[in-house]
Length: 468
Ligand SMILES: Cc1cc2nc3c(=O)[nH]c(=O)nc-3n(C[C@H](O)[C@H](O)[C@H](O)COP(=O)(O)O)c2cc1C
Ligand code: SF4
Image (cartoon, rainbow, N blue to C red; front, top):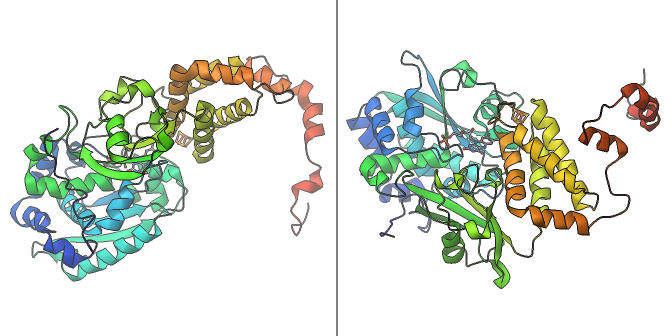
C-alpha cells in the first residue's frame, strides 16, 4: 500500500488538541476561511460532489449529491449532524467528538456554508456525556473567536450550532427518527418521501449527515477532490475510521484508506485474535451488516465488495471479531435481543418479526429448538425490511441480515446445536407450533385457555390507583 497520511486522526496524539489554540496552531479553520472567503457555496457543493465522498453513517449515500436535492428556492436550511452512533461496537464518532471537536465544527461550518444552513443541530448519543461537554466548550471557543455566530470572517454568513442529546434509543440514529426526536417527539421514523432535503426538521429543508462525513469536508477543501479520490479502492474513496472490537487483543479505532480487509485490521492493528485463538467470523460494519466467515476475512471493507459475501454493506465500518470458541447461536441471541428491543414498533413486520425471531432464537439457545425453526426464521428474515418493501426504515433489514448470513454460513453448526441441546420441556407450546405451521388458530376454542391464563382483574391495577 502507498504511504498513507492520516488526516481525520492526525491530532489525536497531540496534547490539548481539543482546544482552539492547539487546533489553530495546526492549521485549523484555514479550510473554512478558504471556503467562506474565496469560494461560493455552489463551488463547495461541486467540490464535495467531485470528491465522491460517500456518507459514513451507514448508507453510503454520496454527500455532495444529497446537498443538491435541497430546493433551489428554499428560504431556510437546517443541518442535523448525526452523532447518535448507537450501532453496537461503533465508536469512531466518539473519538472525533472527544479528541478533535474543532475539526468537527470546521466540517459543520463549511458544510452549512455550502448548503446555506444557518442553524446546525449536533444530535449526540445519550451516553456521550463527555463528548457533549467537550463539544459545548469548543462551540463557545469558536463563537468567541468568530468561527461561529454572526458575520463569520466578515462574509455576512451566520451560523449557530446547538448540541442536542438523545435519550438513548437506537432508532433515533435513523435520520427521520432523529428529526422527530429533535422536534421533541417520540423517535418514530417518517414515511419517505418527502425526504429531509425537501421537508425535514420543523418541516424545513434539512441536511442530515454523519459526524465523520462532515469531518472529511475540511480536508477536501484543503487538498482537493483529486487528493480524496487518490485514497481507497477504485470505487470507494477517501480515508475511513475503522473500529475493531470483540475477541481481539486490543480494541482500536484506526484511520486507513477505504478498502482495508478485516484480516489486516485484526492482525496488524488489533494485536490479533485474543488468547492465541482463531477467528470463526467477524461482523464487518456494525451488527446490521451481517457476518463474514473466517474464509471471507480478506474481503475489502468498502462500499462495494461486502455485497459479494452477502453482507448488507460497509455500514459503520465497525468490525467485531468472534473467536472459534464462541457458538454462533450466542451471536444470534445478542443480535436478536438488540433488534427486538430497539424496534420502534410502527411497522407490524418489524415489531412482530423481531420479537418472534428473538423468542425463537432464545428458545433454541435454551434447548427447545427444532431444525424447522431455522426455515421459519429465514422466511421471516426474507420478508421484513425496507428492501422487501414491508417497513418504513432499515432497522428491520439490519435485524434480518445477521440471521440470513448466519443461516447461509453456519447452518450445520446451528442444526448440530439444536440436535445436541434438546432439553425436555423447553420446546414450543402447542399454540406456537400451530402458528409456526400456519395452522388456523381458532380463537373461540382458545378463549377458555386465554381466560384461565389471564391475571385477575384486580392485579391489573397498581396499588394506589383507584379501581373502576
Ligand atoms: C436503524 C438505523 C439507525 C441508524 N443510525 C445511525 C447513526 O447512529 N448514525 C448515523 O450517522 N447514521 C445512522 N443511520 C443512517 C441515517 O439514517 C442516515 O443515512 C445518515 O445519518 C446520513 O448521513 P451520511 O450520509 O453522512 O452517512 C441509521 C439508519 C438506520 C436505518
Ligand atoms: S422498520 Fe422497525 S424501527 Fe423502522 S419504523 Fe418500522 S417498526 Fe420502527
